[in-house]
Amino acid sequence: MTPMTSSPLIPDHIPDRPGRRRLAAAVTALVVIGAGLGLRALASGDVAKYGGDALYTVLMLALVVLVAPRTTPAGAAGAALAVSWGVELLQLTPVPAELAQHSTLARLVLGSTFNAPDLFWYAAGAAAGWLAMKGGTELRRTPRLAEPIESR
Image 1 (tube, rainbow, N blue to C red):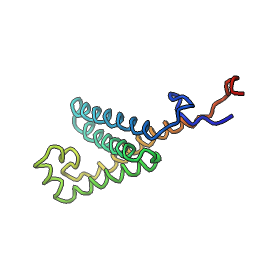
Image 2: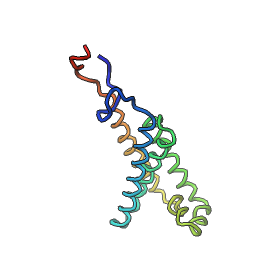
Image 3: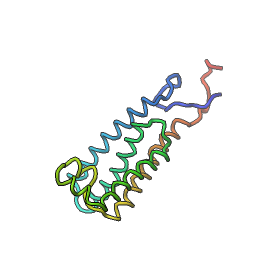
Image 4: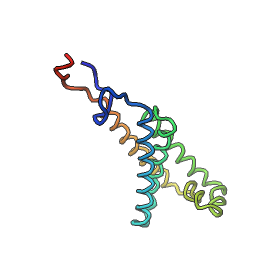
């Protein structure tokens, strides 16, 4: 009996390829962007702000997997958290605020003002992304309970 190496949604004879992880990461990135825009449209105050922070890091995690599909869940979460914290710490300088005055995209990506609680919410987003990736990895590693009679 051999352990199952593919997802329950992918037949055993089709290996799990980096292309599948890239596709999943791209779809995840689009869903997270939609969720972030929806959150801003439907919520306000701390819910929108801190929920957006967590989603920002989940988006960074999806982008890490898109670029490096063989990254482990912990590696992807760590890289996403490092980028998120790096961007937040960059806000201690005048650079993001200056760029935000000239570009909506820069404002969305870099923000403009340092806010210490954001660091916690980025970590929460990294943890949520890690858990989601870890869950998907565990599904692919679930051993088969019995082989079909034809293969014995």
